Length: 124
Ligand SMILES: [Cu+2]
Picture 1 (cartoon, protein in one colour):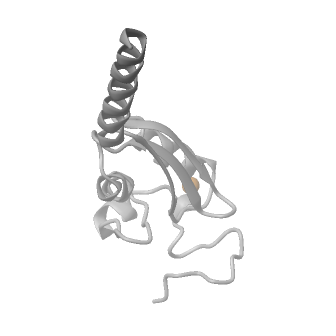
Picture 2 (cartoon, protein in one colour; picture 1 turned 180 degrees about the horizontal axis):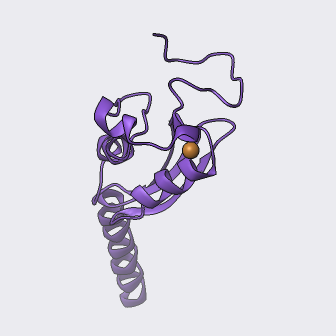
Picture 3 (tube, helix red, strand yellow; picture 1 turned 180 degrees about the vertical axis):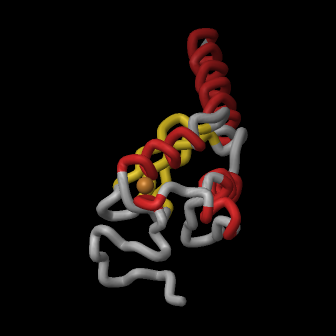
């Protein structure tokens, strides 16, 4: 009987622990981020080298950013904003034109699509 009580206590603690983990969990998501080259890749990934982000990998071919973040420390919206702040549009937040204009020529993804992707999202 006593042993059984001990087991129950451990079980309850384990459940409680998993609940507190649920409030601060690692979230993996994919965000569309527009850019061209490896310079863009460095810029995007460096912008996301910040608290709450565990991993950020951007693929210049697919324009997809794979990001793993801690939900208690940063929100997905903030990630979009961080990326836009260094000049890269995401599917939710657009970089402002002044920041975009400061990018090196090869990175001007709105005007020059070096990869010839068909569904270029930025018309003029
Ligand atoms: Cu670039």
